[in-house]
Length: 417
Image (cartoon, rainbow, N blue to C red):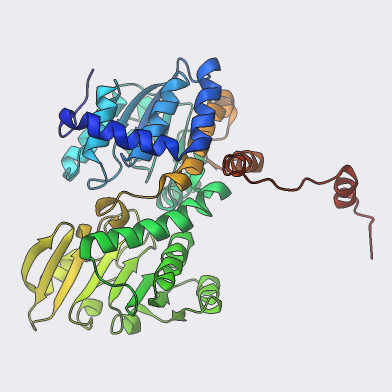
C-alpha cells in the first residue's frame, strides 16, 4: 500500500488511541455499524485533507466501512499525530502525513491524494479544493461534490463561489449547528487552553488573557479561560460580537490597548495581522502569544523576528524571543494551531458530532451532488436534529416531543391572544 508517514512502527501505539476515541464517539460508531451493512459509499473515492488525529482516524475508518476508497493528507504541517498516521497506514489507508512537514511537503501530500482521482473531497481549510481548482481543474470534472470543515475554509469557498469560480458543490459542514455550536465552542475552548498549558505549564488563574475574535471559537476560549480564573479581554471588529462579549462580562477594547495589558494572547479570527509589530513593542516582559485560528498569519511572526536579538526553544512548542530592549515574548507552536500542535486537538466527544456530519454529508453528496448548484450549501436542519438526538440517546438523556395538538397550534397562523 502506498503511504508516507514518520514511522510505521508507531502503529500499535496509534491503534490504542484510536480505540479510545471510538469508545468516546458513539454517534459515529452507530453510523459505522448501520452503514457497514448497506455500504452506500461503495465505488466512491474520497480524497481527504484534515488534521490527522485519533478522531479523524475514526472518521476515515467509518468512511471505509461504508465502502469508500480513501486517500488522506493532513491539513496543517504541525497537527499530524505520527502514531495515528502510522496506524492508518498499517490498516491499508493511503495516507501522506507526518508532523513537522514543510510547505513543499505539505502540498506534495495533497497532490499524492489526488492520484486517486477522487469523486468526493473532504476538506479542512480548503487547501485540497484550491489545489484541484488551481492546478488540476480537469480533475474537478470527476468530482461530484465536497465538504468543508472549518470557518476559514467556508469563507474562502463562499468568496470563490461568489466570483463564479467554484467548479463543484460543497457542503459547509462547519455551519451545521451540531458542529459550530459544539466543536467550535467547547472543543476549541478546552483544547486551546490544553495546548497553552502543555506548552507552558503556567497558572491561568489571575492572568489577563486577551482573546482576539469573539466568534464561536473565541467565545469558547474566553469561556474556558474565565472558568480557570483568568481576567479576559476580548478584541473585535464586529459590533454585535463585541456587544455579546460585553454582556458576558468581558472587557472589550482595541488590540492597541489590550497589547499593553495581556499576559496571554490567543488569536481566533481567521484574518491576518491581528498581532503585529506595534503590539509586540508594548507587550509585557514574559507575554505569551499563540493562535487557534486555522492559518499561521494571524500573528505576524516576521514582525516579531525583526524586533528580536535572540530566539531559542525553551520547551516543545515554546520559543522565547528576546527583544532589543531585553523583554522576552514567548511564541507557542510557531503561530500554528496551538490546540493541535501543542495538544491533541478537540476532545473525541465533540468531534463525534462534527464527523458524523462529515460522514452523512458524503452520503448525501452521492445522492444529490450531481443536481446541486456549484456553490456552498448548508446541510439540512433535520440532519442536525438526527445527530443531536442520537448523541443525547447515547448519553442516556430523553427529551419531550410535541403533541399533534401542539404541532397544529404552531402551524395555525390564525391563533391569537
